[in-house]
Length: 150
Image (cartoon, rainbow, N blue to C red):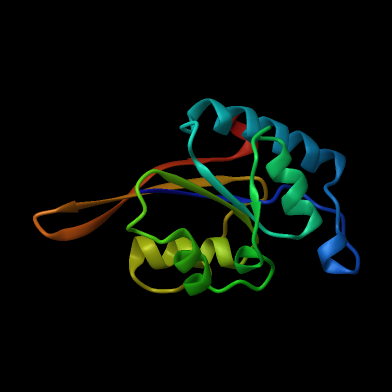
C-alpha cells in the first residue's frame, strides 16, 4: 500500500477554523504539488480530504475526484486516519489531504513506531509505502516533496 500524506497549503488566519481559505501563496503551493502529484499517482488512487475549506482547495489542485471525510479533518487522530485508509492492508494508493499535527503524528508513528509531533510543512507531501518481507511489515519513505523544490 502507498499512503500519501498531503498537508494543506498555506491558509489565511481567522475563525471559524473550518472556513479558512488558501492564501495566494497557498494557491501556488497547491498547484505546484498538485501538478507533481498528479503525474506520479496511479489513476485509481483513492483521495480522502478533510472537510476544511483549505484542504478542499488544496485537493482541487489534483483535478481528480475525491471523498470528503471528517475522519481526516482538523483534530483527527492517527488511529482514525489509519482506519479509514485501511493501512496497511489496502492494495493501491491512498492520498490523505489533512492537517497538522495529525500528518506529522502519522509519519512519526509509521516511521519510528512512536506517535511524536513531527512537522509536515504546509503544502508538502510525504509518500510512504508498506510491504511484507520475511513475515515482517516494513515501512518505506519513498519521497518527501515540498512546493519550494518544484
